[in-house]
Image 1 (cartoon, rainbow, N blue to C red):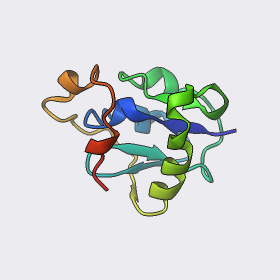
Image 2 (image 1 turned 180 degrees about the horizontal axis):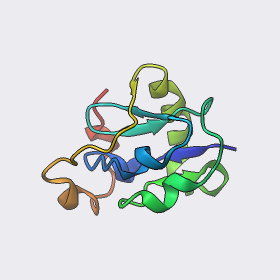
Image 3 (image 1 turned 90 degrees about the vertical axis):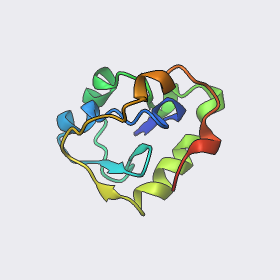
Length: 107
């Protein structure tokens, strides 16, 4: 099992989660974070730190978010490691409640 970043992170990109990760498994894209499934040790620390509630255990993913397993795996191979908390986008709090944001994901 691994943990997966889901749609709620798109355009929010809070980075509270990256500071608590003991194995540096987060990768950063332009407006989204992903977890590298090959690095994740299933420690659960990131889940409670995510203000967007965008991180799930793979086995607990809502059905409409299952495609994020493959997306995290794919993008984690392309994006760079992030280990320090950064400022969130100025409009992150406005985007956190928006649904169906996949089309806004920047690669």
